[in-house]
Structure formats: structure tokens, C-alpha cells
Image (cartoon, rainbow, N blue to C red; front, top):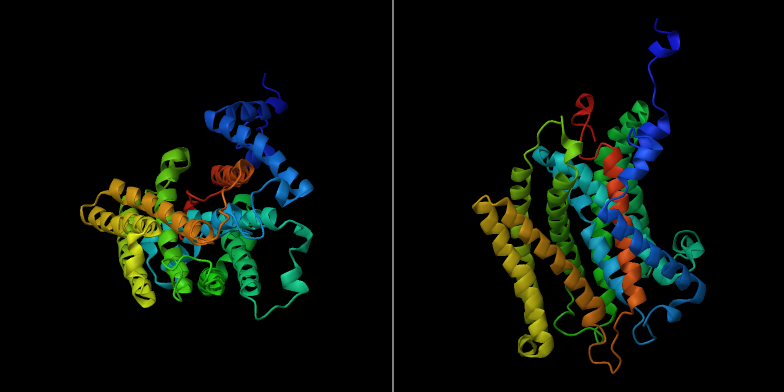
Amino acid sequence: MTTTAERRPVVPSWPREKLLMGLSLREYLRSLATPFNAVAGLILLIGLPVIAYRFIFGLGAVTNLSQANPWGIWIGFDVLAGVALAAGGYVLAGTVYLFGLKEYRPVVRPAILTGFLGYFFVVVGLLVDLGQPWRLPYPIVFSYGVTSVMFEVAWCVLLYFTVLSLEFSPTVFEWLGWEKARRWASRITIGLVVSGVVLSILHQSSLGALFLMAPTKIHPLWYSPFIPLYFFVSSIIAGLSMVIVETGLSHRIFQDQLRGQAHADIGAITLGLGKAASVVLFSYFFMKLLGIADGGNWKLLNTPYGYWFLVELLGFILLPCFLFAHGARERSVKLVRAAAAMTVVGVVVNRLNISVIAFNWAGPERYVPSWMELTVTLTIVTLGLLTFRWIVNRMPVLREHPARRGAH
């Protein structure tokens, strides 16, 4: 005879269902034994103590920074490149909710998540560089330097990070089952998207405006009065390219998240984004030529720095532009993704050129990052990847509940 206890269904606990993905603790720990986790664990095992060492003993003990070179890879890569590569959130949200291109809706949530985590870890990298995290609220609460570009950047980044948090909140509320909160967050989506686009235009360009104050420090081929415009336009390119790369990798790595879901034509979405990227890259290429002409710097192209500038201009702007266009025309998703990967590398190269390589180019002291600086950067990137995977495995980022299809 079956007892009452035996007939009673087993109700999984909240931690097991939401945090352990329905597995027991032993099963979940066993599932963590993968090559990727082993490599990530080794990076964190080395990198986290280095970060602690930096806060205990200061910048001088960890970095090769100096009074002549106060900004290094933590600013050039972690902040400047990080902010650009996180631009997919405002680019895709604006595309879908403001321009009405609903066919790109399946990639909006991954793009917003990428932007949210990108800005979060940009702040982490900035704190590692600046130290004294307890002083983070100073530009917001105590010191109103309204004539400072950094003051504007601090406010815009804070406000846009808040906007990204609210834009991503419907996903969190769906995961938690908080239907009323999800409906409330969905109602303010359009206002959030408008705010996000405005704030992004401001701080993406303002990061470039920082370098307007250093005309004698930056090589003439990279210095231009158009730097704020360059930073803004290249952030659009970076956002489109990162969404293409992230979408391709996510739909390969997280295939189990897509089982039983309505099929989205990721190939068509990728080709559409590739067309847009080719147009923006083509415009950006001629903007860069305009900068050379405005400064009368054509003769500098026939110098060692000029050759490197041509690598950036032709290899990471013009070549991907043609690859995007050719891939979209021939409907080659692989070629478009390859062009997107090249463009992502190109945006990183551009930010490092301006902030590190071509900065203090004529000075006697050259900056080369220490192994601990590189380790910290690799650690922050690893933390970002692990956090992205943790969220996607649990929350409806790539998948969507049928009853909520079309909700943000």
C-alpha cells in the first residue's frame, strides 16, 4: 500500500531551483568540473590576491605607472575599451524600441546584459586603478566640478548604469516570479531607452573629449578636434560588433537554453547587423581621413607611427567594412561574424593607441604594463565571463516564457 508521504510530490526548494538549476548540491559541484572552470579558477587564484596586494601596497608596488605615464592598461583597456564594447545595450535597445525594428528583439536582452556587466566591471577596473573605493560617491555628493569632463562622465556613467539595471530588471523579476514588478518595469521601458541613448551619446563622446586637453601628448595622427565624435561613432560600431560576436557564441555555448523555444532567425539578425556595421564603418573611415586632412598630417603616414596608424585604419576599419558588406551581400553569416571579431579587436586597438601607445609618444619614458597589471585585467575579464554565464544559465536571457513573449 502506498503511504500518504510516498504520494506527496517533492517540491524543490527555492535555492535548488533558482541557484542550483534544479540539481542537488553534490550534482551541481560535480558539474563545475570543466576545463573552462579550471582555467578560470587558476586565473582568479592568482588575480584576486594581486588585486588585494594593489590595495594594500599601492599602485607603485603593482604597476609601471609614473608621473609621466599616469594612465595605463587599466584605463586604456578596462575603462575606455570596456565602455565602448558595452555599447550594444543602447544601440540594440534604441534599434528595437525607438526605431521599431522588432525583428532584432531576440538579441536585445543579451545586449543589455552585456552592457550592464560591461559597465559594472568598468567601474571595478576604475576602482582598482584609483583606489579608495569609499570616495566613489564624491563626484555625485560632495564635489560638483561642473566644468570638468570627468564630472560629466561620472554622472553619465552612474545614471546610465542605473538605466541598464532597470532595463534588465524585467528579466530578474521573471526569474524570481515577481509578476507585478515585471509589469511595472516593462511600462517604463521606452523612457529608459530614451534616457539610455541620451546618456550614452554624452559619456561616449565625453571620454574622447578628455584627450582634447592633451594636444601635445598624443601623436598628431590620433589627435583631432573630432575625437569626441570618433569615440561616439566607434561605440556604435563596437556595440553592433559585440552583439554579433556575443550572439554567435551564446547560441553555440548555451544551446540547452534554446531547446523548446520559438526559433529566432539568428542568421538573418546577424546579416542585418552586419549591413548596419558596414555603413557605420564606412562613414567612420572617412571621418578619420577628414581628421588627417584637417591636421595636415598626410606626411606623417610615412613614419613608423604612420605605418601603425595605417594598420588600424586599413586593417581594422576599411577591411572589416568590406567584409561586412560582402558577407551581408553573399549571406555569409560566418564572414560577418569574422568581420565583427576583427572590428572588436580594432576598437580595443584604437583605445589603446590613444591612451597608451600614441600617448607621450615623444617622451623619453615609455610605459609597458607589468605582469601584475595584465593579470588584474585578465581577472576582471574572467569575472565578467563567469557572471554572464551564471546569469544566462538561470535567467530568461536567451529564452523567453511563451506567456510573456514580446515583453521586455
